[in-house]
Image 1: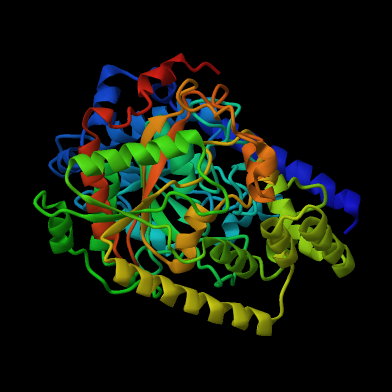
Image 2 (image 1 turned 60 degrees about the horizontal axis):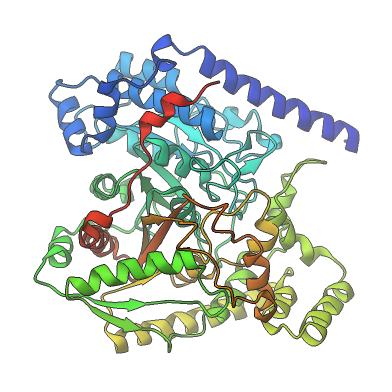
Length: 573
């Protein structure tokens, strides 16, 4: 196929999908285009358990829930461009015919949004690639994850935006366009599950994303919602399409996201209660442990909390530091023990090792699906540096290390390359030794949980990935370790409180930090959400959720103020 033909097919398929999305939205009934009513707002703010109980007892119509959240989705999309496939009409048909949705299940009638990578019968799973347009024919049935959701009573109603590489802090592609932050359209909602975070922050209910280097946690931090990075084998992942099939050096996991912490906890328990190991062979047969929740929810139990203040690669910005200190102070007031982590294992080694394992193919797979002229965000483009001639890469390494005298940045440049199977095995061996080092460190310190920034920065401006791509250590570390980690939003950037000090000197930073800090501007970022990460060990989802709740309760009146869905009524087409 000629380059020109490839490019023309790319443009044609992008236009096709955008027109299809627009038609699906415009053809919805007038009730989906009306302003959010008082009843809608009451539904959005009701506890999820109350909605489920109402559907199960026929006191609440699942159609009314679909209409409320359909309205939210349509208006959130106008605001942020968060949607890809619109499933609302198909969801109506399923409810009318009582086919495939169990309205007595633990998620009875609850609309659920899905990252675009998740396979739903009758709809494309493009992952943002034009070459995947039309692939619905390859998936005549719902994937196992969607079957589980429907068996639980949930109603899939939209799929959400993402970057094609699934390796970005932004959620933009040629097929669906750019997703923006609900608080400031000049900024990213996060990535790679940014469409989810934008929708949930605006008033969506529950959703599912994936996480290989922070992809449900960074979006929650950037957009102001809640998420939980489950350990491998706790949440189902069968029935998806990815840009990196076969990548297991740093395993990707699918995990829950939600607008509120109560919804996140309820959703997680409901899915695990469905025995996902009966739908997906990769899930451990580990039932939900109420006794663990009770143990760590007990107000009499005082926690031993490790505070990871910096990854020693990119120190947290004033806004992210203030959020962490706000949580720390709240925990101290409650009588919990705070433990410093200056002696933690080398986090740059985790960044170096993780980057090499994650990109062991030199970016070949995610680039292989791209058509000629198809856009790739500037951060993921850096991974293609490995395809350059080895002499060019080596000279770049020497220049950065010996002329710039920046050892950290030089080491990452050196590691950006495809590696052999033998090298890959060697890095996996190092990974296991590193995991053992953290295991012993945690045991020695006797932590209950850790707290840390999710990222050194709040949300980044569009197209800043080229400078912030390697600023991922705070989340990426826990992918490498396979630890459970959750995000709670804590505060918003304050232009007065969060300015850089007058003594701040970019020239004294290493190259990774200097590039990231090009984009920190408290005045421009004013009002953007800022979260904190709460970390447990492998398969400690119950503990982490229980501690997240204790943290939120400890914040008291300083608890995060959610985006007001009423503001969606001000959005015009």
